Amino acid sequence: MLDNNLIYDFGFHNGDDTDFYLAKGFRVIAVEADPNLVQRGIERFNSQIRDGQLIILHKAVSDTGGVQNFYIHPVKSDWSSCFQELAESDGSKAEVVTVETTCLDSLCKMYGVPRYLKVDVEGCDLLVARQISRLDERPLFVSLETSKRDYAGLFAYLYVSGYVGYQLVNQANNVERAAPSVIGEGKAIDYKFSQYSSGYFGADLPPDKWLSYDEALTRYLKYKELKQIDNKELGLGWVDLHARRPQ
Image 1 (cartoon, rainbow, N blue to C red):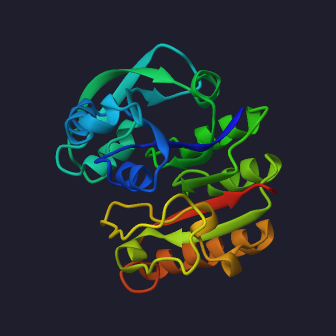
Image 2 (cartoon, helix red, strand yellow; image 1 turned 30 degrees about the vertical axis):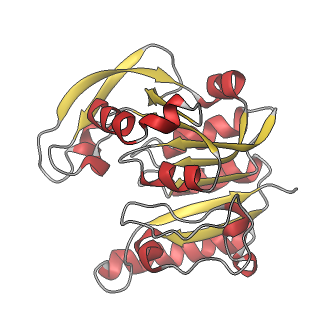
């Protein structure tokens, strides 16, 4: 059953997104595969965990139960991945750890369907998009980092899952992003995003920026072309794909 006070944070990382959701008054289920980040998160959010507002799960997202390898980048924790080639794409040697796995369907059955699902799990965003399409009831809002492997599949899974509005949000701009003029999600708070923040979501996104599937895909292809031409000047940052269901 849909819980409008619940958010899933897939790819908890350093907890900056979870911090924003908690400050807005939401309950959060956070999933993180890196044991070091999990421990830091437990220390950072000790009181919210005790109060039951936050649950941090030390797990990797997968289609299969059991365990799998997770590759931790030695310096850039946001590059760590279930895929060795992604974690070591800059020539670094990743630390390998074994992590228990979970899937979106199991979490929804245990904790409820979230109002918003944020996904930033290096290389596994397409897998989560596929899992969304298999749910009987789906989050009202989702965001996924545009897939480095199959962006077309990412868009397609959201489309067949019944999402009708799309926004492309460049995370590089979140640090300077102004607060929405009308608060649509949770409590109105004075908040400053970090360089790792996914930023606003759902009804806090500009209402005039929602696009159709075709419009969003066309704009993403243009962004991708610019990034290939010159990603230092023209195709800056990295893009999240937000999607909404009819309400």
